[in-house]
Amino acid sequence: MNAGSEWIEAGIGILEKIRDTQADAIERASELCAEAIGAGGFVHLFGTGHSRIPVEEMFPRYGSYPGFHPIVELSMTFHTQVVGANGQRQAMFIERMPGLAEVILSNFHFEPKDAVMVFSASGLGAAVVEFARGARRRGLPVIAVTSIAQSKAGEVEEEVGARLMDEADVVIDLCTPVGDALCRLDGLPETPVGPGSTLAAVAVADAIKVRTAELLLAKGKLPPVITSVAEVGRRRSDELFEAAYREHARRAARSLAT
Figure 1 (cartoon, rainbow, N blue to C red):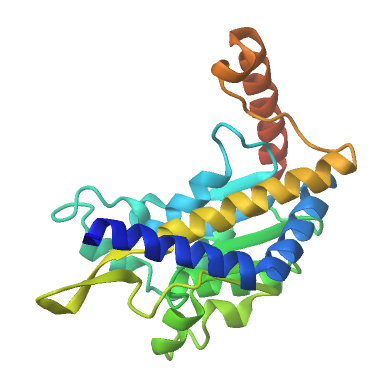
Figure 2: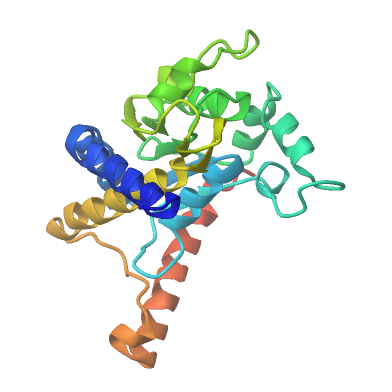
């Protein structure tokens, strides 16, 4: 078996571990999401770096529905420049800046019926920790999706004072290793290749999305689901698209601070 196949096998192992060990946490997170969305509120989503990916996975895209509110900052999530203006060095510096999260939070109006979900594999950056802390200070339940092993292996920044998982009401473990990468190649023992946290985070995001939909459906409160033309035809797909976006806009209008 070559290294590519080994990575897939390792990824399957992580997904199985999430399924077998994180079911209770995913259920509790889904219940919080269903409570917020069913009450007409938002589940505010936040992540920096590559944790932007699971935020975007939640909404908007096919198989998704309003109620999840993605919040990302380009300064901390725009990776394709790599170097130069808007480069990675700046992004990694900015996400470690204490105080930034409170500035981001100040742009939004949060209601008691809302909830917050923060994605971060390391769970150590000032932005994600302080975003969660600020949300809890506002009385909102916080769901953290993080790698417990990776987070514990890193040092807490003195100015930050905690890890993301310390600032959460529900913690979902990505079950990824300390260094994130899953494969060690012969002749390259020091630097493993192929991160696993994106696979894990997207799986957690979709598991929560699907279970939340199931809970909302049982209550008769599931918003319109964005659905592909291939599934329902052009007219119905367009209807669902517009209905979902109108509903998101209605909730978003209430969430912007004035």
